[in-house]
Image (cartoon, one colour):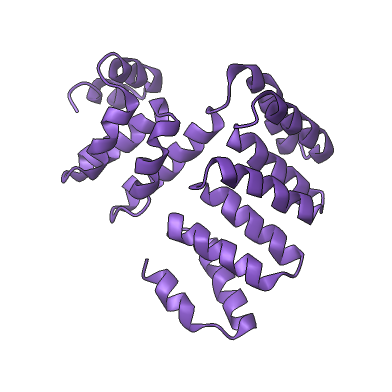
Amino acid sequence: MRVVRPGLQAGDAQAVADEVLLRWMPRQLCRLLGDGDVDVRRVAAVVLGLVGDRTCVGCMARALHDADEQVHALAEHGLWSIWFRSGKAEAGAAFATGVGMLEREAYREAVGQFDAAAALDPDFAEAHNQCGMAHFFLGEWQESVEACERALERMPAHFGAMAGMGHAYTQLERVEDALGCYRRALSINPRMPGIASAVERLEAKLGDAPVLAAVRAI
């Protein structure tokens, strides 16, 4: 806390990252996510979001179940940050271009860039996930499912890819498959109200309402 407080108070994320990396490996910080002091857990989630790597995904995913909502929010944001920067350097340019095209709603071009990034780094889970999103916006539901599956093969804790696959299955009218994806997404990240609402709607459609209580209890 003494090391990171000046940078946090100044709002200088890079200074925090630099100070931490001088002293500890990211995976060493994972233990602090289980500390009894909530402020320590919050700072650990912030720092791991800045400097964490793939080895930290497991502990960050566990922090999604923290009783403190701020720890959860920081861990969720941190996971996305880790996923976005987990690709090899050679895949970075195509991936960044794809993200920009996705934001500009140039979905077909985005697919091409994400495919290029994945070709350069096949284990880059986020390239596959973002490709799945682009396919979804193109109305290519099956292709979206397949891209999400590739992301999950490489990053099983990716609740975003799991939810995205649920969205695609919903469009394919494969209700039971969609419901299964949504439930698995909530088992990883229980604080996703939009997904919880989707579970409720699909369970009502299938007449399977009792399971909702179990999901809400996670």
